[in-house]
Amino acid sequence: TAARRRERSAGKSLHTGLNSPFSLQNFSSLRHGEFLKNTANTALVPFRQQLLATWYGGARPYNLNPEDFSTLGQEDFHGTMKRGMIAHPKIDPQTGELIYLDRSFVSSLVSKTIYHQVVKPSGEAATPIAIELLRPEAMHDFAITKNHSVILDFPLRTMIKKGPGWRDETRSRIGILPRRAGPDAKVQWFETSNNVCLHVVNAFESDHKVIL
Image (cartoon, rainbow, N blue to C red; front, side):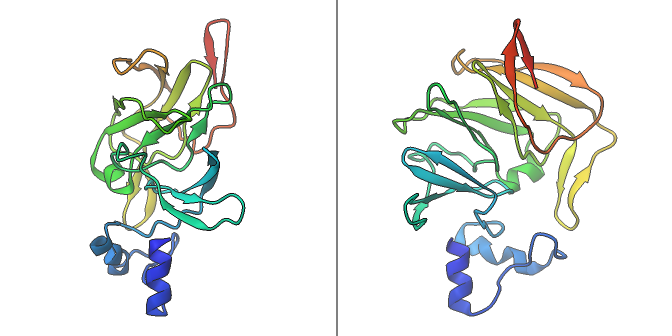
């Protein structure tokens, strides 16, 4: 990664780790266009004969050569990625499309808006769909079914000094977005008991219902 090259050149660590106390060291990437160190070590997603390496905080993923794992550069799908890719994008097994939520570490601090994006196997990106959440939050995963995307709007906030934090005063909800309805598609929200779900195992459709 770009941060690894800078640290190798400096001969020392230029960033604190994920579980380390926050310090001004973390801001050393700002002058290089990154808020925090994008380690690209959270998930590997095969797409278009390459591997996308994602980061837990949300950033442009790195493209890897699947034959030798060499770095090919960062991916933004011809400039259509607005902020970054959350840690766990999805591949539609029937269409080969890549579906992801466009969000970054910085936007999780200040913005309630995320963008739902679909990229065809050709690399062509659809018009992103803006989704308004209840509050800025640390979104890590979501789910897809044959026709829908399942958005998890849970009160997990990003706290710079302490890592993820819980917002007990707000509520939780799950959103169902019809993925074939075009750029004007709207999310149908269902309120749930207050909770947090970091990872999704599976989702599917049965009898006109979405099972998560």
